[in-house]
Length: 115
Image (cartoon, rainbow, N blue to C red; front, side, top):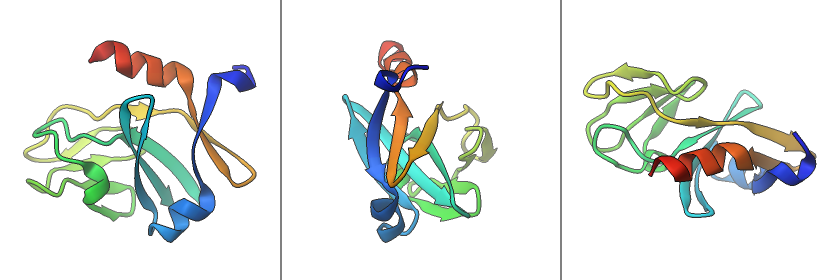
């Protein structure tokens, strides 16, 4: 993928200062950015059960807990890990260049097309 196909979502410092969980909106797509053990992950910032903002939830290890009904998702794969959530969560390709965290434009466009 060419460099022009990636867009900056945050800096590693911003994410660290936010405690490893940050909500962002890029091109109208609500995203949750996570940092666990130095690795970064990005998912849609919307629970598949009741549309709550996951960036307002509780991150423990690789699991994000929805703030509304306490459903769980694995941030690495998007897999629903706890009720009442059953539908997987969309994940996005992310990479780090220096302090910048970048998300794939291709995966953003796919998310926009699904809405």
